[in-house]
Image 1 (cartoon, rainbow, N blue to C red):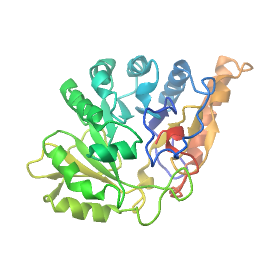
Image 2 (tube, rainbow, N blue to C red):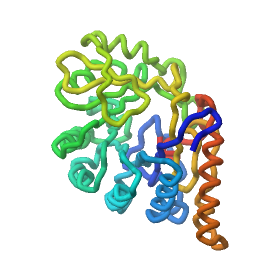
Image 3 (cartoon, rainbow, N blue to C red):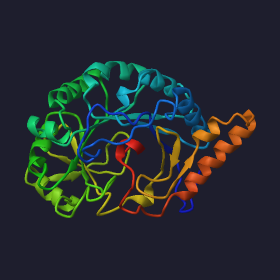
Length: 325
């Protein structure tokens, strides 16, 4: 699949649930968001069917997201079955890390390639505040379980918010000095509801990098696992590396190669803009024969690809747990 701006689409991000065991302040409104009913969520069989169809059109990389994907019943079985699909060469999963102590070893055995762990603070009190009640010790235990299980290319994503956690940039860097993890500092993006992000809280990559340079010199690093939009560096003596994702100040849309499948069956062209296609209705249509359904699915993938904007709008009307981040 090639979009209207000559970008080859080979990456599908799959949200398997809109449920989460945390309620992070930048992801969900204080009162929570409206969750889909069980009937509205794609079944594991439907997800597999759509992934297989995507692979037939050139998709070779899958990322499992949520909500929190590890709350979805049967998630390890789904990953194992995805790993058995010919043509897929990379399967990653994004998680808040709380359940990794329990799941790391079995995820490795299931065929998962890599993990992304979202962690926006190193402090116990601040983690509880950001997540509205989470225990950061669970995440740290999960990180150690991931390293013990032998995963390579593990990424830790930290959204930096001025006045909230920018005073911890040094602490994040020191953490990966002793661990083989790619720490990724991410610019805060507007999403979900009015005034979620304002200029006072936004910190551009340039300022984040200045703080990192106070710890040590950054050297560009071309040796990495899994690819992605981050610009990667190393600090002398560190086991881990540091990446910067500048989705707001320096959009990387010109190299975007992804579509997003939401948990309720929408094929979305972009995280922040562009539009989506209802692909669930095709799967559940009782009036289509198998050949006609396959043709309709192909049309849906092509329509979503054609919707991809040349550059994102910078703002989105949905909340992150609904579209898979």
